[in-house]
Image: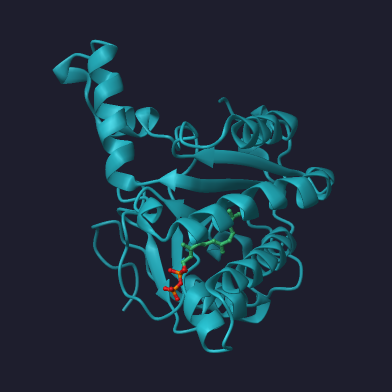
Length: 253
Ligand code: FPP
């Protein structure tokens, strides 16, 4: 789906944060981990953790808008998550539907463009339609692009890209990194600058494995439901101090 023409003209709102706009990431991606442990620590069922995580997601979306971050990608459900107990899978599908029902209109009014990466084919037709309709409704919004990875896996995404290139008869000499990027679910989006993983786990878990080649990582022991605006601000401050070299020589020292 093409991005609106204004995609490169985001007004960096940058309110409430003391970091020069050119030192802020344009694209943040988040592995929202630790919902289950957050719930267990409170003697609650895992789904209560996912619901608390969803409430937190809403707060972080607002914070990203406030900080002038134009792109946010969230890992909501991986291709591997189907292996979780049926009740948890059902609950996560319900949370997705509930979030669209409850939040879509407000997100739309706030200028959020919803996108989806991954596969919708395993969703019930009603939920699939809700996702497609939400993407369609918000497609011209430009304040924040919220890219929801649902039934997404990085290796699966690359396999799909290769298959489509073969189908399109792409010639060997035309296969370049840019062309591969154009065949991914994230085509047209900039690569993530900063990937955040909450809950103390130090792995990438098949998330944006191509796009994140030069991303900066921020790991925190905080469980996702407790990862608040203040900690996001801390992650942004840390990011602004990093010296991104993209394989070149250092610019300071
Ligand atoms: C990982 O925590 C989290 C998930 C697999 C789901 C993330 C989903 C949300 C935050 C809700 C928002 C979702 C939608 C659909 C918009 P975990 O369950 O692996 O936690 P644990 O490692 O502590 O068990």
